[in-house]
Length: 123
RNA sequence: GGAGUCGGCUGGGUGAUCGCUGCCCUUGCUUGCAAGGGUGGAGGAAAGUCCGGGCUCCGGCGGAUCAGGUGCCAGGUAACGCCUGGGAGGCGCGAGCCUACGGAAAGUGCAACAGAGAACAGACCGCCUAAGACUUCACGGCGCGAGCCAUGAAGGACGGUAAGGGUGAAACGGUGCGGUAAGAGCGCACCGCAGCCUUGGUAACAAGGCCGGCAUGGUAAACCCCACCUGGAGCAAGGCCAAAUAGGGAAGCAGCUCUUUCGGUUACGGCGCUUGCCGUAACGUCUUAGAGCAGCGCCGAUCCGCGUGCGCUUCCGGGUAGGCUGCUUGAGGUUCACGGUGACGUGGAUCCCAGAGGAAUGAUCGCCCUCGACAGAACCCGGCUUAUAGGCCGACUCCUCAU
Image (cartoon, rainbow, N blue to C red; front, side, top):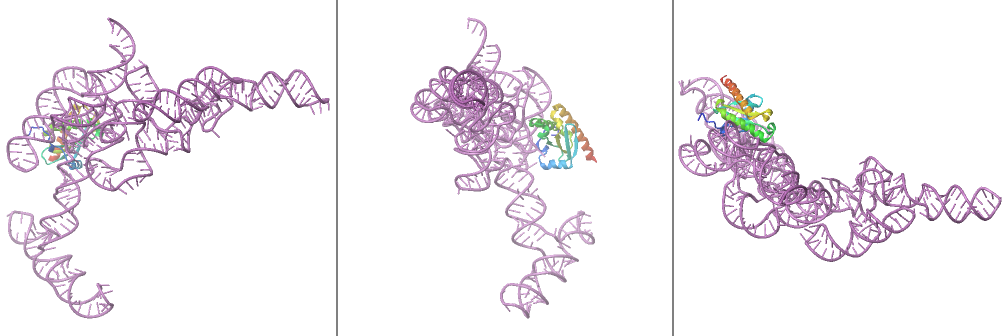
């Protein structure tokens, strides 16, 4: 079961309280396209929450495109990420970026999260 | 073949792999989850939220006022500001297109600039000199004279004239003839307009006749008048279940001993003589505080020690997080027949066609083509408006060429 790349509902942030907990006690990362807030959890795997508004995306179609790109990248890399709750939000520059650009950016972002959280968990 | 008008349809295809989600089936168990299989999974505008409804809650006897909206006529519809058909006006050679298209004879208001004049009109240029007045001249008469009178000619305007020029968005019916000093509905003919009548039409309206010299200048997306319509809020509507914590109510239990305390109850005395107030004494229970012993917790266990001794248990109701529902079978799609010019209606057959909830409907890699626009459901329908790469189909018009 370790190798499957599914993304069921329990791997996503579903509650308002989960988001508030992440924003209150999470560590923040970011790059040109995205901003991430990460908080360790005790579930045994990472969970993803998305915060992409129509205002930053420009239109509903563009908003859906960005959300789906993030979700798919998280799904494919979920086994490399430690057990943290992630809230990913998009920045304005992601609106005009190509899909490949966004995917490359996300891969580096996951790596950054993994390194930072690994050190903080050991300490 | 070219140019155009109108109406309708479509909105990349296909395969593999990995995912998300509604429903159905099977299996498993920890009985609401997992696995496997099947099947469904954004739009013509899902958009703007501009109208109209359904649905839900609140309010409501019926009306009036206020406010807002609609505005040629008839029909369609659940309803509409929508659609269909018709009328009128305007544009186009035409197919066709456009129209906020009720009332200015109820009242109030407004009209910049230009212009002479803008609403009981107006003489700037021009035109005219018929009549009256005036000026000049000629001739005649009267008077001593200044001058007066009569006739004729010329002249302007202090007069007449709204036909022409010019101004303007708009200048108080149009064209022609007559007429006149020049003109003018001043008169006449035709056109227009108003009134009345007849005919056709459900009606808007049209046609014809008679008749009036001609009125009611424009503006109502200015106030206004007339006719008709509108109760308010919205699925975060509304309904159901309901944890933890705190608080509310009820019931039961709140160990034993001693001391203390505010009350309470009872007895006695005094005051008052209606409820009551004051003092003293007692008290099983009740209120407050303290001490000791039980009990409980901390420790693997007994003792010691420390803490606790706060109340505890059960039930009820409100309510938060959360969950379920509303939630997709509907003014529904497809098709056939019939009625209707049409919008549409009636009847039959057949199909089930997204239902998320921090929010699914996707990603990657191939192949093909004409290389792909605008754009993402959030309770549901009917419209309108706006955005849109292209492609396809049908009907019709004009021009050119050929036969």
